[in-house]
Length: 546
Image 1 (spheres, rainbow, N blue to C red):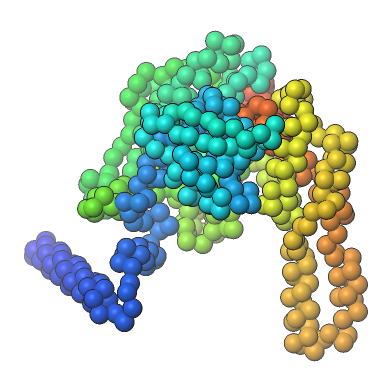
Image 2 (image 1 turned 90 degrees about the vertical axis):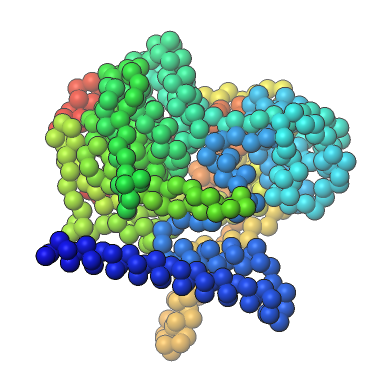
């Protein structure tokens, strides 16, 4: 009798759901039709659909969204790392757009374009006043088609005409790899795009030829991507047939268990994985599986906490719905999805989770690990202080890049050494002189807080009692450009170094340069150089909750 009642209840509920779906769909259709036909002013139906879609998913998770036909090219580039174009990043500079980073070996680079070159015309069209989005659209196109540019060259000041062909631009998932010592290899993996596992495999094998006996895999800032690529990467380091991730959703179709399917390259090489608050999704699958299988040591900070799986569904007219269909679980059985993904820190990472909501799990070797949002590293390293508002203001206004361009022009015939370059006292003095006539529209958080305190004191009628004290504080924290240039010299010098190194050695040069001074990498090298310490971490250390 109980079974019959349960079956009846299910059928009624399903029928009710179908009726609700049909009724609400008809209401939405009628509303859309009447607004388009009868509203007092003309309406943009495409925009209306986009706005309706945003509203429809606003109370769901942050990753479910409508991808209209106009957004498919960008979506494809994010998932595959491929597009047709010239292979360069661009940025706005006044009325024009300039090259901000050419990719080494791609058409822009082969045509001689460098950082700071100003784009004046594209295929005979004067592009003064065009923004980055418009210029990007004009530069992209079918591989093999020609593109004509008129540019003002940074290094010579001359105007040149360039003609070259677009190519299929494939952005590698490996931003840089190299040896950090005679035995420690280093691979920076930036995203999980299509075939990125092949890039990892190639880098790993080349480093082995160079004498690598231990590896640092850098997943910091890696926002994830294709789940299957994560499985393929793990297949290189653990035995064939190992369960590395499973997904569970509402339907049978959204459930799956992923095992490694190929023979590994090396199941014994010591591995240190670097993670931070920017490591998300597939990056958390890889790092979490390394931890759960006791296969490597995690170093850095808690990861982002995105344990949701997205799928795309065709909606017709080349539009798609990207929607969350499942959650993924790493080998210990824990889901690294943040318990409350709608309320995060300013950087998007999950905040502290109450102990009452955290569950304990164990790794393959019996170590304790926890869920509740992200993967906690085995060795936590305090995050570096974020850049000051003043430093950000200098970068946003383009002053850092302008000075780097000036330095590039003055030293173009004597490239900086990628490993040893530093901003000297003379270099920084030159930057301070460069900034002498520059305006910096900057108000510190302390100044803003003081203004708010002054308002509250006035409202509460305390201003007569504390007004003089507030004025004294105001005089001491008042923005002083020269004082701020001295106070934030370390932060500013770091940005200047990155920009200058990039002009001589591309983006990969910046990664190599920074590896010499990175605290997470220093810790990883120490651990990998001490086999006993490495073993102790993987056999006895509890992974912290917070």
